[in-house]
Image (tube, rainbow over the protein chains, first blue to last red):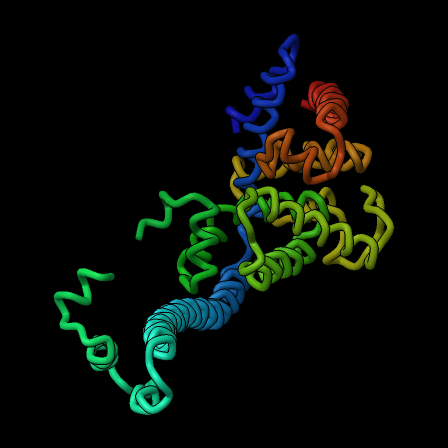
Length: 142
Length: 189
């Protein structure tokens, strides 16, 4: 209490100093039972409510994490599927290109055998056969 | 996890992830100053207890919405709004001579009615009574700034932000309040 009284020597002091002293006075007064912390029952009630809410928060946090992971996995799968589709379309285009070349040099009878189901290697062989070329000569021409 | 070393923001973030102990640490950190401020502002311990609980429940419910701002400023804003709402609902203003129910009687009278304890405690009660009588006489706008500074330990920037007033206004109000408190303390002590 003596400290509190000493803190009230407010004469001729600056604003900051006065403020410091008054704050110190209030800090010392906070020991007064009327300003003492709230009763434990209230604290317990707050903590209990906080604990219940924390369970909900934890659940929501985990759900958010799960959604994030699932979304990332789905995005990765979509990317892979897109890549595979792109590759397949590119292969089809290559086959169509070969058939177009065939249509230029062959009669329709021969084209019947060159279906889209035929592999690239078979089509290439067919093309070379029709042109009467072997692989070496074919690549020398092209 | 050492909660005492964590910042307010870290504690709130931990609580938003479901760590209840982080909230206990936060509540304990501001318990004394917030409650003392409530008692001083409302001049009634019972109302202060209700509002104290109300404020923390509001913080709990809004924990997820807490963003990267000062927790202290956020908490005081909630506290101040609750006090304003409470005053609006219950009564227009508090004065030293206002008469309410026994539990509602002003702090000054209630401190007088306390049972006598050891000499030191009586001296403390006496000083508390005088100091709070002086603070209660301050105009509301000055008292608000004064209590947020000396009990809430908020910086003037935080007070200005909290009360939505310019910094200079907050400083001016504090200056006026300090002068009045100083003058009266010197008379009574």
